[in-house]
Image (cartoon, rainbow, N blue to C red; front, side, top):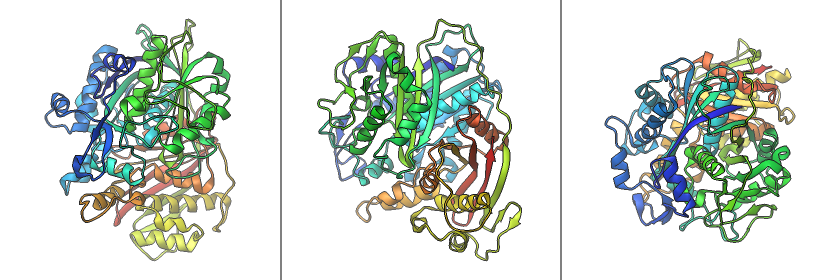
Length: 574
């Protein structure tokens, strides 16, 4: 359990948590319909900052995204009274695309676009001295960042975590969701029988979390009791029809046992046909059909990397206000899972809620949150032990070595991966549809898993829910980003490609591996300003410390271009 001692929200509806919560309670929304915006031919509805709001947030030397994060985090640091220069404090940034709008300028250097560099720039400007960690787990990034903070704090790696989720919208992201036929032209209707798709949104939300026993004199607004990330192992962009990944995440945080104590479940509720259906099935399968459910996308839109944190902070405010917020846009239930939903606010005297979320790559995450207990809890540091290395593989554009032995391959560069696939794998034609990063991760992981089975043969190991996939890199999905942008930059000459868009999230490589091997444990992707094996080990050990994962496929996987790439993966066990 970790304590939340401060929070803040910036959205088109307000510049503080209080302003945003009061706007939600008053039934307001910043969703607006846009025609021909950014040159896009199709209309869409979104919650976007106005020109005046962007101008007010501007900071010289920072991009629009960076300024948004800075403006959101700065007020918290004084409020929380923490020493950000301490080596016991970490900055965690949740985002899906960060500075991606910089790609539109033309031949921008990779360092101006990738999230790790933005996080480093922000962290140094704010005074942090430890290396920042970017959580890039598609739509679940915000909740996944809270889970990461909880893991690191409970493991005793840090005492305090400043966690911020943020994303801004542009032609890149909106056209991508339009290419998937997921965007509604009008205001979205979560869980409604007439729902037609999602609305996108801009915003940032931040929280300061502390380990129990640290800064005990600082009053906590709530406690993060438990958190979990699990994978559907079903499809890269469509959720499981059985809601298995979401159900496993709810099970991992003991939501079923807490059912009678829960004020509400704040769902992802994107208002897309398949996501809302999946969530309803997962909630019912978890035995939570009697718990009220709400969704906030009809108010804020889908704020992507900010969503999980923003919606958690609003839910904390509602819990303090003894209120179950209604779901704006909902009228009649349009899902088959038995859940309780209303567009009206209700009163509650209960002290807990669950936040759940899902995203591309099969990711699902859930946390349970409670008002501070009157009981005195002991510090919950788990003191994880170093894991045992079982197998090790390294891939560069020049060759592949497995457990210290060089594999007999003749090709170089991107053709090396094709030759390795044909020579040692060969039974998964989807390989040829993958982007470079996913091809690199697929080949590396397959060879490593074959070594685990003790043979270089085709076939897959049995499905397992106790294996985590935890990957790191520096350049995110930059190659896939550039390829997708080439399909959308001139809409008169080309057309947005959904096949390219889905790979503009680096966690997709973990999703590919989860689907291939039916792994339903944690799948997480982190971006660092530079490779740091000590930090990587701390993250992995903290994730495995509670015993939910008996082993992990983990390591570094970076694909900045076809001529230069590197993967160094390990299989480790507790």
